[in-house]
Length: 130
Image (cartoon, rainbow, N blue to C red; front, top):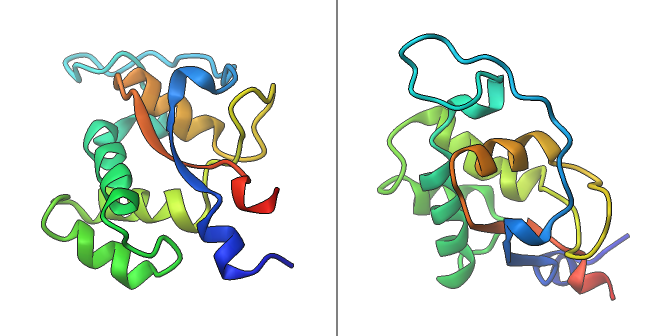
């Protein structure tokens, strides 16, 4: 069992281009949606969610404290669903280390962020486990 400190140290800001391919097929978006993909995960405001995930780490907010993450997000993300997506990046994180060939978790959210043009996000890289 990992300690909280090991888990906290495993969150890093990562360039999504360094992660493996997500291998998720694009779905046809609804007409007029302005989105490049129509899958469920692509419906969120991932550019802003990812930016706030980076801010959480850079500002020293405890990524394991859901209430602290939500409080930080309150002024940055307007929708409840987007705030929950932010929390998911820490409570059910994307798990992959740069250079690995497969995801342990988070392919769909990574796909959605890539479709939205996100460059960096908070990722659980297992750094604290080494």
